[in-house]
Amino acid sequence: MAVSGRTMTQGRFGVQGLAMLAVFLLLAAPSLGRAADLAFTGYARDLETKQLLYVESHFVRNAGQKGESRVVQYRCANGTETFARKELSYGEVREEPEFTFIDGRSGYTEGLRRTASGPMVFQRDATNALVREAKVPANVVIVSDAGFDEFVRKHWNDLEAGKTVRFPFLIPSRLDFLTFKVKKNREEPIEGAASSVIRLNLSGVIGWFLPYIEVSYRKSDQVLMRYKGLTNIRNAEGENLIALIEFPAKERRTLPAGGAALEAQKAVPLVARCAGP
Image (cartoon, rainbow, N blue to C red; front, side):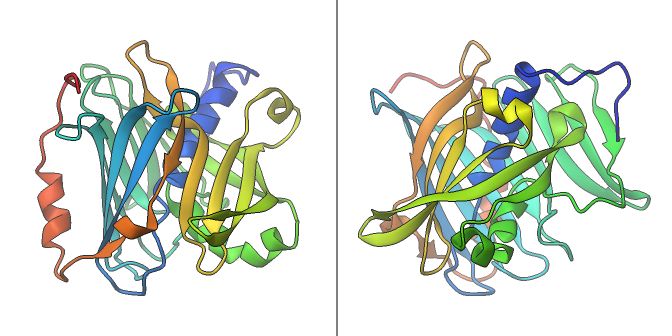
């Protein structure tokens, strides 16, 4: 899946890799039972000022089963408009779901889709730009997007034991994958519950020069409670936002079965810009 004319650098390449890693960390579904329809919310705030930057509204159908699907709405800080959306669908390999992300402000699009000839990664920089795509190599088990949630659960015992675990993560903007490493850093209480704080960064020398990402999972059920670091959402200048994102337990809820709530979210229009608060 190498792309001709591209070289790997410490700067932009690594930061984009961490930003893309951020997107699937923010999609980890809570373990509220199997085959459930559920919803939860994340609030992204500036690390220093604590100003609300945006809100993530997650909707999951048939959680934990083959055929599970999700919709994530990225809403403006005013809470009334949606500027980006992600749709996911799970198959046999839980670590490699199909997904499509689109930002209505720029038209930026990326994702992974399955075809008769195998999975294809695709990306488009803007509404009028050409779509780039490449075939995912069949001999590599790649983690894509929210598949990281399944990866964490599969390796939970190793992480709790303090081991470092490496994995290849798909980077649609590069039509390629990078190797990341994860390791438990510490434990701390979140909303009164014991949580494991897991630190992630790029594997190898490049990772020494780039910021890390921390994700906190509740120990009792591996539910994502907090995220801190670079996100996949960009500001008006095109720079990836750095944020603290919290997922309040009180806002995790079960939805009526049938998927109507999730399907309704797909029809919500995306705005080209966020209005004031």
